[in-house]
Amino acid sequence: MDITIQDYLNILPLIIIAAGILISVVIEMYAKNSEKILPWFSIVIFFSAGYYALFTVNSQSVLFSNMIVTGGTANIFFFLFCFGAAIVSLLSIDYLKKAGIYFGEYYILLQSAVLGMMLLANARDLVMIFIGLEQMSIPFYVLAGFNRKKHFSNEAALKYFLLGAFATGFIVFGMGLIYGSVGSMSIDAIMTKFGDVSTNAVFIIGVLLFIIGFSFKIAAFPFHMWVPDVYQGSPTTVTAIMSTGGKAAAFSALFIALSPFFGDVSFNIFKPFLSALAVLSMLFGSIVAIAQTDIKRMLAYSSISHAGYMLIGVTSGLASGTAGVIFYLAAYTFMNLGAFGIVSMLEGENDTNLKIDDYINLGKKNPLIAGLLSIFMFALSGLPPFAGFFGKYYVFISAIESGMTWLAIVGVISSVISVYFYLRLVVLMYFKEGNEGINPTVSNTALLGVVIAALIVILIGLFPGSIIELISTFVI
Amino acid sequence: MIPIEYYLILSAFMFIMGVIGVLTRKNAIIVFMSIELMLNSANLTFVTFSSYLGNVTGQLFVFFVMTVAAAEAAVGLAIIIALFRNKQTVSIDEINILKW
Figure 1: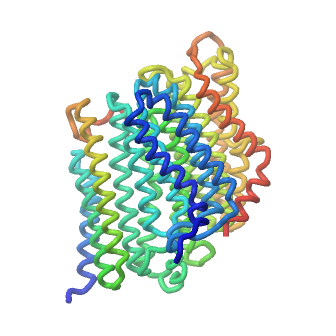
Figure 2: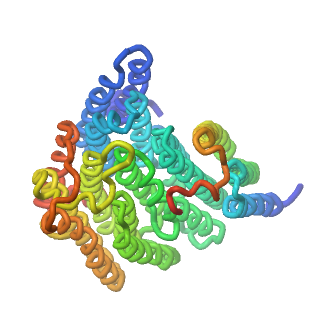
Figure 3: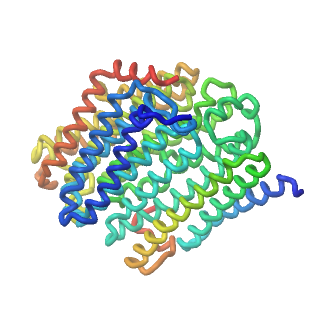
């Protein structure tokens, strides 16, 4: 099989990011003020790769001995990762100075993690899923512990590393069993032989181990125990990309691996397991978030419950469910990035200003920030007309279509519970007497990033129909 | 020839030992060693199936797993050292400023 120029053009986003990493390493080595150059360089890299990916979304192809696919949903994920990471780079510029970790390496690691996410999203082979997963996870372990003089950051890195590697063990062993029963690691081969192996116990156990491993990565209950600690301890901008891009990439891999099952009777074996994960994550995340006093921990529990909502779409096993989850991920990426962006803006030196009570009276002291944060909170809680509402809507519809109305009902109950803790923040910002609370100093670059995220959230909320249509055309 | 089941039972046993080690041991380095045991049990599975099926993909994948495990070990041990410099301990029980 010949490799043509067109093939290279199709994987250009990957090449751009990979070249960006190498050039960044050289800049870091030779430039004196690399920490000033690298953020803008990485923004250019992310933006050009993301824009190109969106531009070539229609050129679908399968490349390199069926190892990777390009175009379609893979490119939509590319766009999410790259724009998310570009916003994170904007947020990081002033945050790193404040946190005392003003180093250029941060952006190299960020680019490496994004390359891993992209490899996960366009994998067509279990080997690629494994390499992409590790290419994403290892930079994240380092980034979580980037503030190496702080106990919080050390501890977050250790917990993330141990549980992440533990999950990798499950994934690799699961892949081993899948390989043994199918005789190949290619998703296409699994699809071809699916009829023979779909009831094979070894194969089923392999897929279950694989799902368990990825449940760690998407932060679903009962595999969530690392999430609050890691999200709280890591530098806030790292948490922002970890909780959005990392989750989206893990979901994309789950879809790739489960795609042979969708529409097949044998998927019923996994339905009870997946729906249990979904229900427990939603309810656990929403209920425990109410009790939190730290805003990063609250957002961490909210991220667990969002993983639950997205799992509803996976459980449905329908194309509409897959499209709904991708839409949800797009909305979630930008609203969560915005929320964490504002947290990183308001955070003081030495991990101060992270309590929910510090946000009291923000509406009077800084109306712009308070307004933006309210948009993200409304969007996260799933109130119309923001993006989050339509994400939940499409996912719940897919559950009803697949005959699991009860799952949609539990989802609605859980989102009603979650409205309480999202809107509590808004109430504290606007309707609290007195003069307590912090006086934030606002960084302009971070504000730009947050405003972009807010605009995207509003745009997705205004035109959900055309976006879901675009996604649906690529989901088989 | 030894039947394939023997190898698979051995690798499943190693995997379960690794999981138990991760869940019960308190020293971060021993937990990490247990994780490596899990990865190596997966490698044994791959090599077994590869030889049994006469298909080379599994053996190739083992090299990927070993490479990645080496990278992971480099990062993981560095994280443990950074923590040890700050806290003078690698015991999971004492690493608790963030509640689990």
